[in-house]
Image (cartoon, rainbow, N blue to C red; front, side):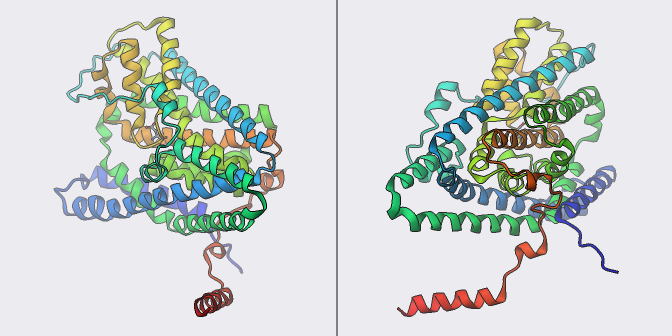
Length: 449
Ligand code: ASP
C-alpha cells in the first residue's frame, strides 16, 4: 500500500502541538529557567537558538522578496492605472477592518464587564514608548537612502521605491526587456528560497512554541483569565465572523477553503509573533494557494503587514476596557470613539513586529487619560496574546488581498478552489541533476569567453 506523503502543513501542525505539549510539561516541571540543566541547555539553549535562527532566516527573505516581487508585480499588472485602484481599495479595506476589529473588541469587553471589581495592583511598571505621529509616518514613506531603508527593513519605504522603480522600468520600454526577465527570474529564485526555509519550519515551530510556552507564567495567566478569555473570544469573533463575513459578502468565495489555506500563515505568525517576519509565507500562500495574482499580492501583503493589525486593534479595545474597569474609570462613548480613532491611526504608523501592540496601547492610553502604568498589569500575559493576535493580523492581510484581487480580476478561482494548490512538497526543494550539469556548463562557457 502506498502511504500518502505528509504535507508541510500537517508537519507544521504536529510541530506546533508537540511544542505546546513539551512547553507545558517543561513549565509544569519548572524546567524553564537557567537554574536547571534542562532549562539552561534545552529551553534557553537549543530551542532558543533554533527558533531565533529560523525567525532571522525569515526576516532575511523579507526585503529581497518584497523588492523583486513588487517590481515584477508593477511590471505584470498590465495597466499602471490599476495600481492606484489596488492601493486605494486595500488601504480602505485595511482601515475598515481595523476599525471594525477594535469596535468588536470594545463591545465584547464592555458587555463582559472584564476587569470590573478586580482590585488589581501590579508591581510591574511600563515605560511608554512613542509611536510616530501621522505627519512623520507620511514623510517617512519616502526614503532618503534606499540602502538604508532596506538595511532597516522599512517596509513602506521599500514599497514606495519598488513601485517607482517598476514604473521607471516601464518608461524605459523596449531596452529594459532583459532587465524585466532578470527581475522575473529573481522573483522566482526568491520564492524558491522561501520554500527552502519553509521546509525546516516543523522543527523551528516546535522549538519556538515549546520555548514560548515553557517560559509563560501560567499562574499569571490564571490571575488574568478574564482578560485573556475575553480577548481570545473577541479575536475569534473577528476572524470567523468579521473577516470571513466580509470575504463572503464581497467575493462569495468558500469560507472553509479560506480557513483551511490560512492555517500555515497563522501558525507561522503564531510562532514568530511578527507579521513582518511572516511576509514570505503570507505572500506564498496568497499567490500560490489562494490564487491572488502577484501584481496585487506583492503590494497588499507587505502593505498589510505594516498598516493592518486587526488582532492588535482588538487587544487595544479589550485592554482599554479592562484597565478602565480595573481602575474604575468611566470612559464614556466619546472616550471609546477616541480609542477607535487612535488605534486605527496608531496601527498605520507602527510595523508588525513582536510587542508593538503595547506601544500602540500606551499611545491610546495617553490620549484618553488612562494611567499608562496600567499596562504593567497585562504585561506578563502579553507574550502569548501577541502570538494569537499576530495570527489574526496576518489573516486580515490575506483576506483583504483576496477581496481586492477578485474585484480587480487578478484572481484565479481554480487555484483558490483546489485544496491541493501550492502545497509544498519535497519536489519543490529538489535540484534537478541534469539541469545542474547544464547550468555548470553555461557558467564554464561564459567563464572561458
Ligand atoms: N506582533 C504583532 C504583529 O507583528 C503586533 C503586535 O500586536 O504587537 O503583527
